[in-house]
Amino acid sequence: MEVFVARQPILTKNQEVFAYELLYRDNEYENLYSNGNHDQATFEVINSFLHFGIDDLSEGKPCFINFTETILENSVPTFLHPELIVIEVLESVKPTKQIIENCLTLKRQGYRIALDDFELINEDENATKLVELADIIKIDIQKTNRTEQLRIMNKLQHANITFLAEKVETREEYEQCLKDGYTYFQGYFFSKPVILSTNDLPVLNHNLLVLISELSKDEPDIDRITKFIESDVALSYKLLRLLNSPSIGLVNKIKSIKQAIVLLGLIELRKWIFVLSFREHLEKSEPFLQEVIKLSLTRAKASELISIHIGKRNDSSSSFLTGLFSLVETIFKQPLEIVLHKLPLEENIKETLLGKETSLSAVKNLVCAAEKGEWYRMDPIASKLKLNAEDFNKLYKQSLKWAKDVMTGKETT
Image (cartoon, rainbow, N blue to C red; front, side):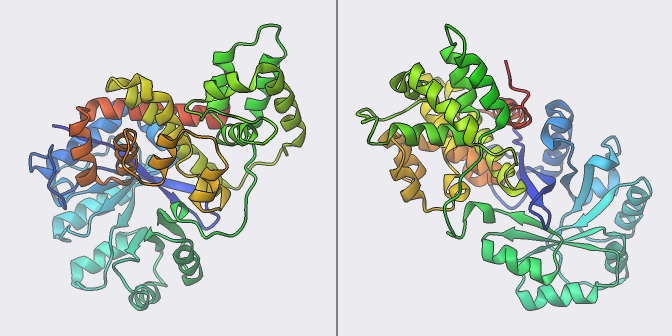
């Protein structure tokens, strides 16, 4: 049975990552891979956590995992450590006596309980008991109007419950939910930024140190230099901006970072890196942007690895840049068209980022659909690319680890 794994960040009021929700195909969609047994799909995903590596998926954060009614009634998977797991009870689960008893057992063992897509409709005895056991209540702000949201929060204000706003799609919605008293936030509001001003993204300091060391050698390793510039969104962006300046007079369009380095030349690159090292501040960017950057790096590496895996090695560098710059609108707080106009990227990459259909679109769309758990979009693309779930999960795991290592400075060889 084919099962894909994806994750979505859950943020705090300070836009720091509190947890990740691990997603799998659910019973809302028909798709090419499902055999109709959704409980089995859930078991397969839980088993894949062990194979995939919960540490690689969670990065030390708690993971929200959806549980079906059958699993809660019959097989409570207590082999997953309570500190790393939040058991998310789906809205379709009927609060039977057995469900309540099993949830109570989970609570006693230290697990946290979250109620998904919560609504104040069924207020029978068991439903009330389930709410009393809940640590977190998730409210879909797209499905539940604000008046009803406030009614739910007001009625449960004296309970020891934390509220999580899900499907937060815009910055304005995030700010309204913040005012209304939500503690956690889940959604893609960071992909649809409010255009405020330009933003100078800091370079990862450990990358600058490695590059300075490498460029100081008599015979610098261009492949190693390429590796470290590729692993830094800010460095990649600034390098392309430099090449696009009138003083350089670039004729060719760029489809890889290595091509950009060769066109600039090691002497000019050395000068530029040294100047950057003096200009960069030591303070880190806001935690929210750190997560966006990590997501950009994950998209880049996943796109590259998938392209190579499906036999399109010639497209792998372009796919990498497409993923790397897929969130520049959010990072630099400017419309995508304006940001791309400043970069000497080949037209194929620009058109892909702007949503036009190109030879790079399938891989980009596959990775983005997987992030959101949109299996109904993902399955036809994966089938067309002849990419099965096991191979995708393996490649995505490598991408997550690579992005994590880059952000923590471990990718230094």
